[in-house]
Amino acid sequence: MIGIVLTAPLNYGFGLALAWLLPTAEFGVVSVLLTVLLLATSVLAAGFPWALARTVAQARETDTETDAGTDTAFRGALVGNVGLGLALAGGFAAVQLTTGAILPGVGAGLTLLVAGTIVLLALGQVLVGGLQGAQRFTAVGTARIVEVVLKVVLGVGIVALLGSGALGVGWALLLGAAGAAGWAWWTLRDRLPSLRGAVAGWRSFAAAAPMAAGTTGFGLIGTLDVLLLGALGHGHGVTFTAVGIYQVAAILAKAPFLAGSALSEAVFPFIARSRGAAEAHGWFVTAFRWVPLALTPVVLVLVVTPETLVGRLFPAEYAAAVGPTRVVAIGALGLIVGDMLLKALFARGFAGSAAARIPLAAVAEVATMIVLVPGHGAMGAAAGFAVGAWVGVLALASVYLRHHRPGRVRAGVVVRWSAAVAVLAGLLAAAAVAGAGLDLPLIALGLVGYAVLAVRWGVVPAQDVARARDLLARLTRRAPAEEVAA
Image (tube, rainbow, N blue to C red):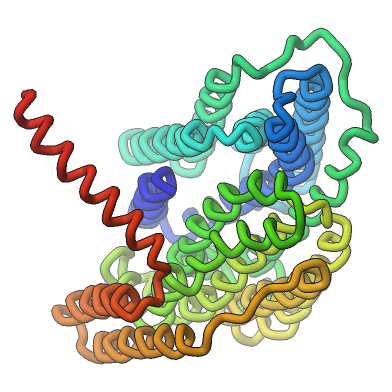
């Protein structure tokens, strides 16, 4: 979570800087490039890394973390995922170099940079899977920080100082992926087996296939809107400029998903080693409760007052992103819930059932876009994303509820939470009509007021409030002691 807190502003700043530094049409090309790599990351983080994380987590629970079986699993995951990365990179390069259909107008240099980045992502993702299974979350967060810092510093520097455009962004992405993979290898070096030795066969990674299918399908839900907007809107006035404007909406509205994904990844090994459905569900609730408590208020800000952020962060030519931002934010909340359900099902060994239902969401998204994009452009893509995300929630929830018996939330808690959200919504509505100058103070007042009411009314669990107060007390005690020592 600290890694997300540190990297989210940098990712925001990266998109913001590129929007200012690049022409709108070239920013649209970069948007498609980033989406291609996001989809590749979803595929490469899907099967082998999660299967390895589950194996290492279960071995840790039985105190067999260093046994030969885990070593063969490491070797198998490395060979399998890097091989998959090579296949994806080769396929991308072949299609792009022969047809130019994925990134129109992009030459061989940027194509090869993207292909190399895909291979490095394959290596880095499987190493992160090992770190997650071993519960080395600091190393996981640091790997992401290294990747983002290198990407942002190099990307903005190369584009701003050398004017290299999309090609400079490609170099930054390659070096960022290399830095993350190098850090993950260094922090996991004590657990990495010798390259010589037995390699786990396909049966040892039977769980990887449905995990890969499920995560790939889920990754499509989050990327098809950008990838298909230009293709479905071709001939209907949708240009790369329109794609760039839509990407601004996606940058803003999908940001809360990063926090939700961090929660689901952190709780994954605890669900994987649970001894029964009740214990597993308890760990799931530990992470999921922060969706309504913390992430929903943030999404509400994006739904009610997106013009506050769009108008202040991006050039005037991106003003049309306000409308899509509202719809994409609604879909992003569904993507957060779906991601938590998907990873919980993976951890419990129900990847096959989840993977069989995920395509329903992708089909619903594509069908919605086919109908709406020709006539509504970016708004049609946003609607398709929102429909796909929430269809995914329904599909995955049906599997989860079949294997778990969640308890009921007390009616009093729901009423008090709803009242706190209503106060926030009222102040956000006032901010939406107040205009520049008063909108930011009203938004801040709404968020602070919601937090105070949620704590005072007992919506936030008492144990979490106690932990926060204890942490604050320890930090305040440490600060004077450090001053005296200095």
